Image (tube, rainbow, N blue to C red; front, side, top):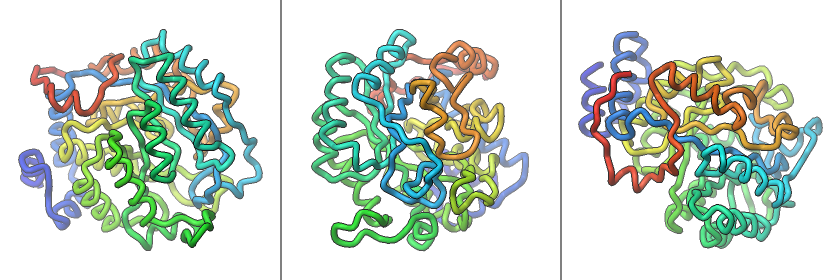
Length: 365
């Protein structure tokens, strides 16, 4: 099995059968070898730097009814909110002196949040913070809307496909889009959106939930093969965590070990990718963020949202948003990263720049 890992390091790809064998492997020595190789690859590319992004959760309004999500449209127990442009800019103004040079605007697919307002907000951030990168994670939009956001100044867009298996996708999302009906969702349309984003010129991110209900190892192999073919600049993966106000309230959370294994696999497949150690990892275990970094992640996203609104953006239960997960807890985050031999980088960390300036300095972590 170690030979498969070494082959992945050399060739950046395996067959479907080889990926499945690696995912099913539970040998501790093999898993340690996988993580070590992924860590070595990350250190060779980025040194011991971990890039920070300021996460701003701009609205919890959503037109979708994804069965796993706490802010789904039919959850009547959510107190809805929507940040104004000035509130979003104020979050950026608080983050910039702390060293944030990437702002991530994340929100539900809200029909009330008109595309022109997003365009105006992106343009306002670009004018006030011209040296910063702007990442959007606002779901499925039209090709025209994506173009408008891009020309207004957005650099990156994250749209996780969640699963590449059509039948599994239908088990996680309601309905299909027909005509002007936007109440349903389809995998085909989501993949079309990802193609549009790359075509327009975004640094594009996709990813999956690990351990989502009805997910199988074969589904994960499909996801790996798709990500290998799509070659995203960003890869966002995290464990599924249930929310009490969803149809999947009683489902078990995803596996930490399997999530870390996939994170290492993706690092070896895409050495220059920007891969976050997600809030979901930090929610699942107190040291989850650090374990993600040691498995090959190179990005963390402290929360810059107004503290009064953070609990309302409840995608899953017990979502971490304070302490080292918060922008105001940056010193605590620095201490935690330093304890495992890493340090915060306050650079923008653009994928293409990093891909062209590989750093082969040796680090002992």
